[in-house]
Image (cartoon, rainbow, N blue to C red; front, side):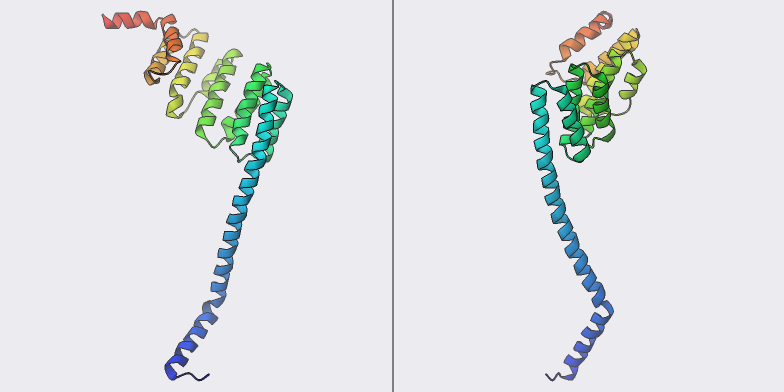
Length: 218
């Protein structure tokens, strides 16, 4: 096929451009295709992971109903080992901690909760684990450890619970002034509709908060 002068110049320019950048363009296309394939595979992999984790979590729930703590712990450990990035892993660990606590297996309960506190990507899960760890520390009279778990920042919806837990530890340490301060702060942050307000108010009254309130109101 014959080309006129202008067409020939355009063709030569195209050939020169491809010679200089053609290999780069080819690689960019390959990279783009590989990225798309990887993304598709990852979504498929994640879906399979979630489905398998869901089945294992369902088995864990059945073991909880059967009150078989050994199987509960085993299922939770399997979920943490095989599917640590799924949401089922921290959920399973929290459920396993409750099962272990009810079975008076405090060692397993603490291990499950600490895993959540250390590795969970959801702040709410981490907060719940730390509050429960503080409760176990209180039972074990490990007061400094309990306060350590309650240090730092927490999601706003857990602030009242953290202050309430701190108050309990201060009471156990016979630090009533600190306990009253924590209970008052907890009440301030707790919703009026929260069913825990009555119990919290009773704690404040027992530590002398009611009498102090009357003096201030006069």
